[in-house]
Amino acid sequence: MKLKLTLLLLLITSNLYAGPRVLILVAGMDKNVSLGNELKSIADKKGAQTTIVELEKLDLPLYYPSKEKSPGLMAKRRIKKFRKQMYNAQSFVFCAPEYSGGLPPVLANAIAWVSRGTPGKNWRYAFERKKVVLCTWSQSKGNRVLEDMNTMFDHCGMKIMSERIQINNQKRKNIGNLNRAISQLIN
Image (tube, rainbow, N blue to C red):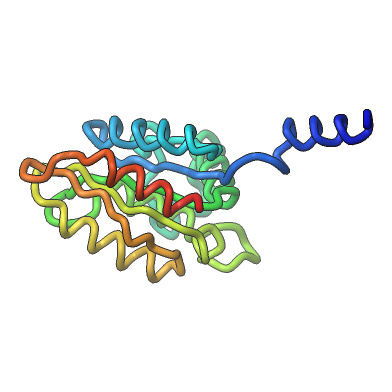
């Protein structure tokens, strides 16, 4: 009996019993941050292990091929940590406003750094077969940023969830929509 209780306690306190690892990535320093935090709260309540990354605070250098070889010591550490977070995540939420009818530059830049990845790994390693929920809280309708994210993440081999979150001046936040999106992601 003691052995069974000890094993149960070990399972509960270890990552073997933990919920799915969800990484929420937020582009922008506005309403998308509050949306990301709200989605984190919902996911945490459903048992997920959730981390939120504000891409602007990550402060990655602009990606270009020659920069990859020498991004600078501090940037290299941030890139390595970010890649590790992406590799270890089981699923993702991307919250991004529409910028000039498309993706925010900070999001495209972050994906470029991760897709270059680690030597010897497929460039899709961080993305392939992982679930993703696409979200936007935009001044415009947000259709274009959702389409662009859909195209990019589909190309990366991700499983794009059907429940999207789209909030704008004409379309208010719907708590049921947020709950359904997170449920799709972690179930």
